[in-house]
Amino acid sequence: MDISWDLILVGGGLANGLIAMRLKQYQPNLRVLLIEESSDIGGNHTWSFHQDDLTKAELEWISSLIAHRWSGYDVVFPSYKRTLLHPYFSITSEKFSYTLNSLLKGCIRTNEHVKNITPNNVTLNNGMILTANAVIDGRGWSDNLNIVYGKQAFLGQEWELDSPHGLIQPILMDATVKQNGGYHFVYVLPFSPTRLLIENTYYVDDKLRDKSMLTSEIAEYANQQGWRLLSLVREECGCLPITLMGDNLKFWQSLEGQPVSGMRAILSHPTTGYTLQHAVRLADIIADLPEFDHINLFLALKEYSNTQWNKQRFFRMLNRMFFLAGEQNNRWVIMQRFYKLSPELISRFYSGKTTLIDKIRILLGKPPIPLVNAISAIIKRHPKLKNYHHE
Image 1 (cartoon, rainbow, N blue to C red):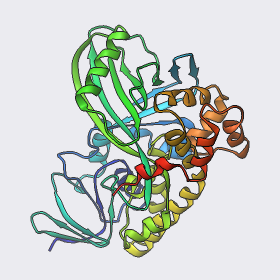
Image 2: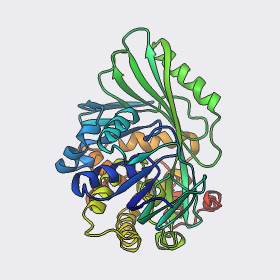
Image 3: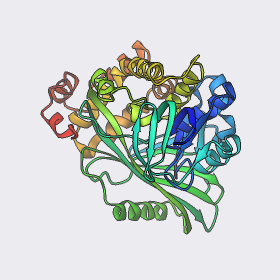
């Protein structure tokens, strides 16, 4: 039997890493252990966000994690392109790992495979049992029958080029690429004058794209831009749930008192899949708790999740219209129309602060999808919904 901890965080990703970091800042005497099954925390990811996603205070306390900053970004569609002067930031897993390993010395265990989790203990594959006042499971999304969702699948490759690429800011979406039966776009982050992260992304209904196809599409895109790929630095891939509908209360009941964080708790922007905003706010909530036990922690997490779920109703409705009402190869038309709206509305949309006037403006005018299909999606009666139930 190992020593007891105040809190054990299982999974060394963004959400649990920020919780550990904030607790170190706010309650340094707490005994906190972060467990990760791979060789390093942070995995192989890039987490990006818009400046308006966070308050000034939130941006300040995570500033040591930020690896790249830009003054704006571009979006490109078949018949429209635009530059938006909204500051944009990225946290790399490399910077995340370096910062947290320096801050949390002696509180991180890597290469630890977990056999079982309960609200107050963790059993490792070697039979060792770690006990704590509370355990948070932050090991990423896990299918749940109470949540209906589409998928955002992506493959990102970081490349060193043989000459400067010429970009001064990210391309958030380039949807001029062939759509191939789903909303398809390329996302590009310029990390240095000769280094790019090129991410191939699909919003798909069910079947995921083959990695070899995604890889060849990245190479083709780079060639079209005149970028000569010299050496592959790393790859990252994933599949994020884009929530269409569900029962959040039953979701939390199904957890049977087990505290969860991050995507495990469905804490992301429901349309974009961005997770950093909620990870930061959840870390602040947990750091403010007067005492740690798994019951109070579970209730605090559940309350925050339910509050966000209720606020996100409009976004889930838009997701249903996007996935269910539009023809797959023409979904880019919806996004092109959205990006013609005011910069302030777009900023509020990304930060989850959409006003009533914003919602009306988004829905106003001739919809780029059949009206009957849109209505059936809004009222959750579209026949295609059955295809999105995951078991």
